[in-house]
Length: 89
Image (cartoon, rainbow, N blue to C red):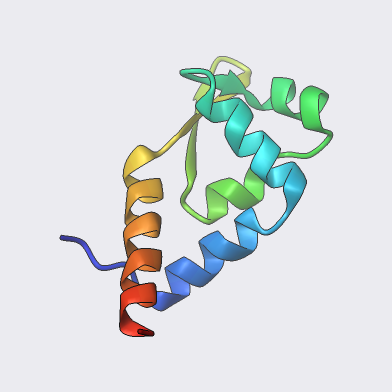
């Protein structure tokens, strides 16, 4: 089992603490990939904070950046939160 550092949990929590960024994550997760320009058109914000938090990954294809969710990062984040809750009982 991979234990996530507290700093990474904090970074991801801050990235997900905004309703618009949650919508962006949901939009990306609903598609195999989605371009950054489509995300900006849909939500009005860039997914840069989600990328910096390690929740998504972007890759350049031509002039577009295609983003996808990193399931292992979401799973590690959820595991860390479960571990925190068990430690607080």
